[in-house]
Amino acid sequence: MKMRQLGQLKTDISPIGIGAMSFADFYGKATNEHSKEVLSTAMDLGVNHIDTSDIYGMGISEERIGQFLKKNPSAVEFFKIATKGGIERDALGNNRFNNSKEHLTEALDKSLKRLGVDSVELYYVHRREDGRSIEEVTETLSSFVKHGKVRQIGFSEISPNSLTEASAVHPIAAVQSEYSLSTRYPELGLLQRTKALDCSLVAFSPVGRSLLTDKPHDSKKAQTMPFLKENPRFLEPNLKKNIKASEQFRSLAFDLGVTAAGLALAWLLHAGTHILPIPGTRSATHLKTMVEGSNLMLSADHLDAIDKALPVGWAFGDRYSINQWIGPEKYS
Image 1 (cartoon, one colour):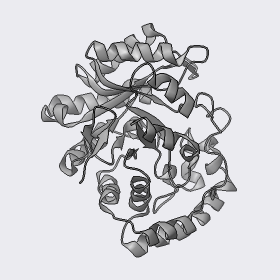
Image 2 (cartoon, helix red, strand yellow):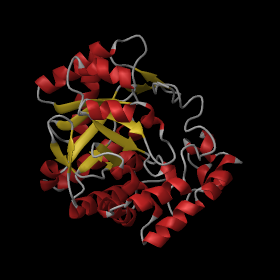
Image 3 (cartoon, one colour):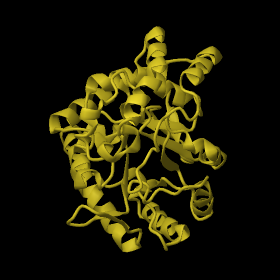
Image 4 (cartoon, one colour):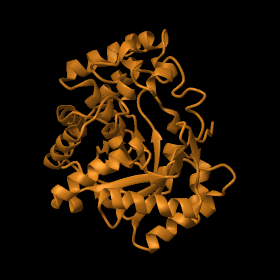
């Protein structure tokens, strides 16, 4: 596996990482054993990028990673861990955003304790708080670097202009955004700005929350998942239309001898050397098939065939519901 580089420090990092939201029941019941198997397989495959957050299962994802690190000391040096803070959840399950220095300092310390480490490779602000300047928040993140708790800093779901403003205060190593063949919004400026600023673009949901896999979630399965059951692309009639619209892509992957997920990830990796997809999975077997995408070389003819199978704008429904759009910055 040919490594890529993360941020301005050029940390060697695997081209495909692990989105550890799946360690915390987000897309179905997860267990300690699931997480252990995925992390063990990741080490065997050379996958060293783990992305988590304090909000994933209210710390469960970080705790499961920490348990693995405690039992496998060599994994502490092997994995390049990214985690996030800045979201609070009340007793009713409602989110609010808090980017104050006091909150982020406390959140980071708790994350490090759950992970069982003294520092992490990358720390993101998960969502921006309205009314607090990004310059102020970047100064807070910068202080974590100075104190040795974090090597690099980033933001999730911010606009190109916010990235430029933050970068004037301190180098921003990565911006996390949804990016895939079904969500190409970053191509409207974020993809270009991250590259210009030598900033990695960490692509979450790179297989379209299952739409770009061999077995997309059907309506019954989607309705068991709190996030998907209100997501426009997984509500009928959109879901049936999306599954039908992506059939040609699955056929193309079959003809190439790879899984649809592997082909979707290969397409992302060909879109830019600064792009780092982080698919989530509870299955070691699925991780192996997705890593195949990092070894797949796509010709101009292959890319043209993918574009014909899934042209820009092919998906039915928005990527977020009205409530899910609270927090991410729109920029076009």
